Image (tube, rainbow, N blue to C red):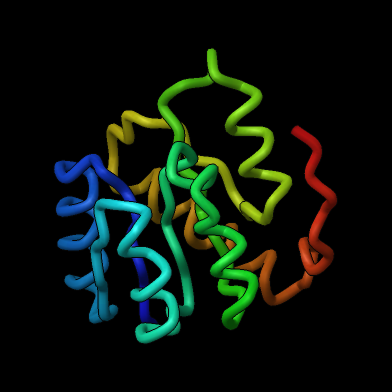
Amino acid sequence: MRVLILDPDWRFARRAQGYLESLAHLVVVAPHAHEASQKVAHWQPDLVIVAAELCDSGVLEDLHAAENPPAVLLTGWMDRYARVWRAWRRGGHELLMKPVFTIEELHQAIVTVLENAVVGTRTRRLAVSA
């Protein structure tokens, strides 16, 4: 599976990358939103793990314009609920709270996203209101 991790938190990104690569997945990490569009177009990921704070920059729209891979949203700021809710409505498929203490949390989020993608529970994009 091709996985794209879009997160400025390099500690989490490297840990997630190491875990996924240990399971023989191909992983690309992009810490900034401006890199995301190029990575999505050239990499065509099967799964995206994206920080909710990057979603305001059009990352999810770029994903939907491409192959529309399932997306795990990462957030550490539930006090910024409006931002997370906007990201979710743009096309997030699962929400994972940071800090992620165990790799099993990431694994379960990925399994849930992939199961939902197969079942098709989030096939329709929702309208976004600011």
